[in-house]
Image (cartoon, rainbow, N blue to C red):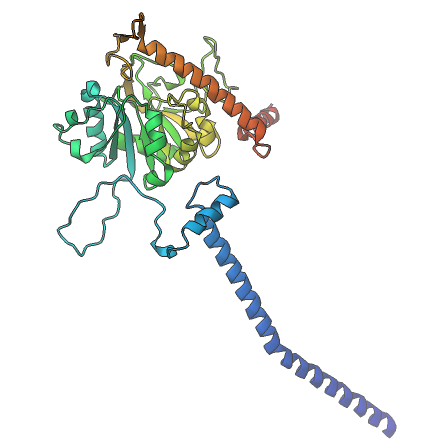
Length: 400
């Protein structure tokens, strides 16, 4: 019995020593594990910080730049500390002096932009438009295609607008060169309008309230049915609606029904008075072709810049509508019913508007070819609206 108790005590003592040894070993492990955890956390932090700053630097440059381009730009900026770099600008006019030299530069207060191509013959129409937009705290930039700037200084707002001059250039030519997304990124919405628009029934503030509440990334005000020129039925004002996203019309060559999935039946605005959100303009600017200055065909593809389903993100606002005067001013007489002709050297006269239309038609053909070629060559690109169409058809089958 005594022998058994002694053996039992010996076993307990050995177990206690073993446990004590393990505990001691564990205690000795704790500082080591702490060091390992600290090192791992430091590595994770440095990796995350590097990725963040790399992404931040990449967004300062062309969004589709290659890795080679990114490193090339980064190399050019190595001489500057990161905090001093400003990759964006705006179109706000700044005073040459301030009453308080110690005050900081004032923040941009105008959060929306109106850009228009203008000629002196449409001065009255432009004056009406600009007054309404200035009252709504818009920044105004005018593109003078006729070279006449001095004729605008007698208007009370003349010095408040930005004036850019280039003879016989189109709205899309100006927009591509002077409305780069990095320049206009401070503005929530960009109105890229023609000059021959009547705004008696239009209020910019109420318009934007509707656009924001309905989530429209690309939009336009509806056209009064009495407008001189209407090219697509979807742009005509619906008197009983606040806004609409599609049109139903079974007449004519293009038939629009509930099953229509794209332009010009839904997801469409026309090029005369489009309004873009900041994100939509970032995309649309890249869609505009640098050398195809008339912009034909672009309106049919704007839905791809709607930041989602174009049948939901693109719309026409009915309660705030405009009148399209249909004045062919660029290369024309500046009057809706007159035509301008000129003579070549010793040759018979020709109509300028006919020549412009011929050029526009050719540019449309080129634009379509470029689009199709780009789709074919970009193997990673998937048409997002094919997915929406398949999903819509699937839901319809389930409902049936």
